[in-house]
Figure: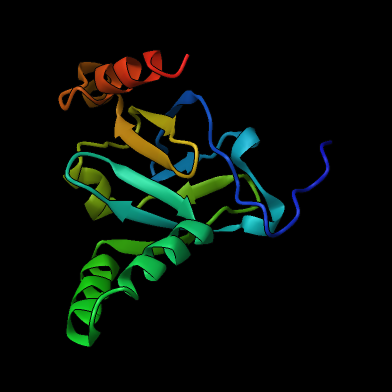
Length: 149
């Protein structure tokens, strides 16, 4: 078993995985993405997918919010909080998706989702939406990556 990461090193989420959603709205987090020190995760609903992130990403957002004045900072943090929830990886390596948010982005129990690593967080998509790449994000990412390879 690999050594646990030091607590100051943020986790890294790589690759894509296809996983089924169970009847209780749980998905198994790939073993490569499970960090013992980072059992607490945060889940955020976006327009067409969910984003799961470690506390380090929340702290990065808070630091950006701190650049705003009091009222704007409060409004931004409140908007973030309305679309973000805490979750934990259970003893079986699963997280529970908020049912209403999952349904809002097209995720259904018994169906496959794509858990897409985005380095500092991971996204959860309904597999059919991910495969259709409606926003063209995969093509854009591939084109940008060509500039770095």
